[in-house]
Amino acid sequence: MALEPAPVAARRSAGAQPAAPPLERAGLGYSRFVVLMKITLPLIAAVLVALIVVWPQFRQVREGFRIEIARLNHTLGGQVVSNARFSGADSRGRPFSVTADSANQQEGQPNTVLLNHPKADITTQNGAWVASSAPSGKFLRNEQLLELTGGVSIYHDNGFEMHSPTASLDLKRGTAEGKEPVQGQGPTGDITASGFRVLDSGARVFFTGPAKMTLRPEGTAARR
Image (cartoon, rainbow, N blue to C red; front, side, top):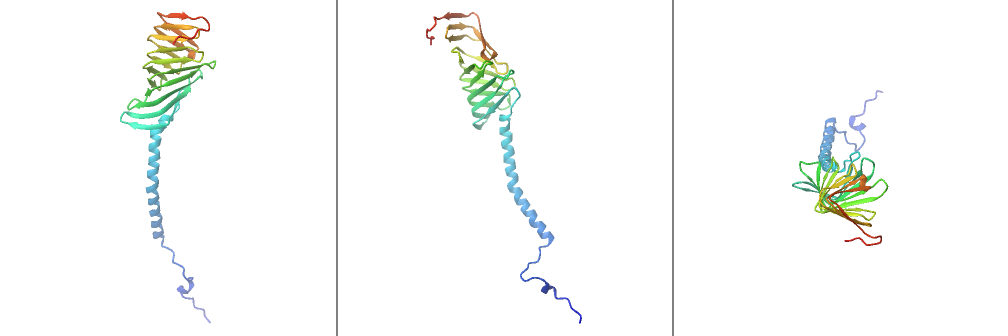
């Protein structure tokens, strides 16, 4: 007796759905891909924009400095950084840092940063500490020059201090210079001069004339 093949419908399991045609499956996958790209591409673009804006602020230069920021704002004049901190080392590896209430990088002048209430801390080769402060200043990033204006105060941890209208600090070389009248005082006496120079991150200080120094007996309090 010959066997006849069963009908096609009988060979299908009960309730089974026919497979989607290949073209239909390809269309469904493409739609999912389009939806995914609509979500992913804007996120990637936002991350790239953020990196373009913030990355220059974190760039570190060899024997130079790096900048740490607490908050970055934007103005018509450029970028404004609140609670900015520059830090690095000079040509001899001596560390320094510059802080400011705010730092404003002018548009079109990437090398110049204007500082509000800047303070500079420098460590000498023997571990001594020198600090400078002023109401305003300008930092030249490539040259690592800090120009202080508005009344500069310089303090050494040995008890000596100087005050001058302006001062220029070369952070790379560890030097400072003032070309306007300066007043200084320390444990041994007071000095007035036409200017000053600080070398070796504060290890040596020179005064330019005419200069006048008044020595005090040991134990006498410094004049304020």
